[in-house]
Length: 282
Image 1 (cartoon, rainbow, N blue to C red):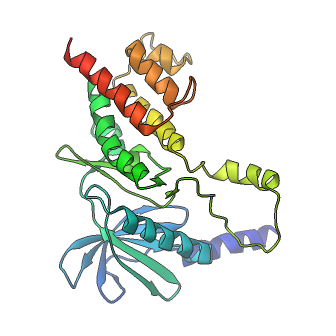
Image 2 (spheres, helix red, strand yellow):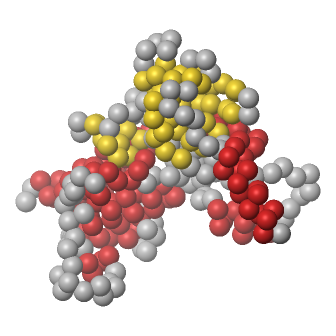
Image 3 (spheres, helix red, strand yellow):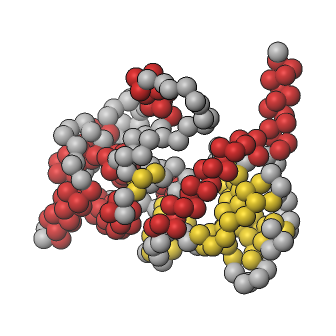
């Protein structure tokens, strides 16, 4: 049994091996660099030989079969519906052999993850509020279009010369849309039975899911200035460790649903603007 498990893992890894540098994909796109890998796909930085532009090319994993291809088509459709200058624009979509590809505009910049953990950038309360408001300009637009991103993490937020961009819409869904399933079944399943498996893997497609992500997003920024006072590893809550205003603490607690959650993204934005104004008047 172990041998077959090993063989299955080996074959999956072999089928999913990234394209080599300078490989031409779709008779048009020259692979320049592997940008990243996810559970269902790999993303490359490519040169479009036809236009001369640098693009991002996302490839479905063959080992994940039709489901990975379905997710990529879904992501293409969502990007087409959104069309925003701070969101990648879908440029091309094609199938080559067992691979499906989505071509998008390449977004230059440093991720917030790189800025914090590699470049040592720090964010106090004021800069955290300002950065979050920039992110919310895009998130509010997405919500008003009827979608939620569902993956608002610091590796998916890029900055270039103070301009913010949001990438990776692989998990995005329409508000209220049920999670995609990995297989189709003709047998009806009671919601109660299906709910437990879905809940373990997918977030609800509602604004609050994105707001919870933003709460963690803000904590990452605020912790960039944190230094342990006693030099020990004594575990304390973020409320105890971070030196932030009571007002901002309450905002984050509402985002994380530790207190009454926000009813809408607009309500959250309003509170952040009030906080920003209070800091400006000091």
